[in-house]
Length: 302
Image (cartoon, rainbow, N blue to C red; front, side):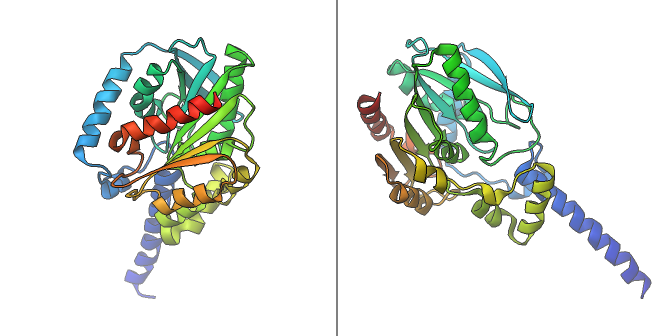
């Protein structure tokens, strides 16, 4: 074997190992790959949307809240945030954020609506996000279980008779659908905004030929298999009214996914599918229509 070939084989192996590690960090870990983030960075929305979101976040940061913590089944400390709006904890919307986000990113854009309806707001940072502990993102495997623990916390804190709205976005939209078959009676209805059906499909799209190695690594280090993350079983068992919201120009979670979820669900339901709307943008592009749908569900089910 030529000397150059002897050098090349180990170099290729090291390069492949480095790339695999970076890919795994990018998809599954709190600390993402700096290199892949730089290479893949692109804006998913138009600039006015970012300005709208920035203003909402700045305003939300000034609103006082009560902070709580619970421990996950994995022993991680999880952080939650309660914003009283006049119901003394008897009516609460539980805002559930998405992948590589945190509570303030999403809750800030819906605070004014729920405040104006006198509904208290609770939101949490998922494991490996924001102020919560954790190294690995669950892509809904951890998050749905953790949020069910938060519901039990809220019941213990504010009373067994509280009424809860689950309102989730993107990964959080899948999380609330995953929770739907196991929710207590306190949950009166669910809103899934831009939710996906299963994590397996999205991981395959992101990772390509690296899918199987990443899936194996995640089973070893994070302790779960992405093939086990699918909301269809929970939806088949759910009896909760569900509002499905999805933008028709969503490039991150295809609109066809939201439409299929809506058609699949056999329980009480409604939808808000909006033209010219990208991922989780509906509150920005169609605020009046969104408010009308929520008002209808609140009047009917709470």
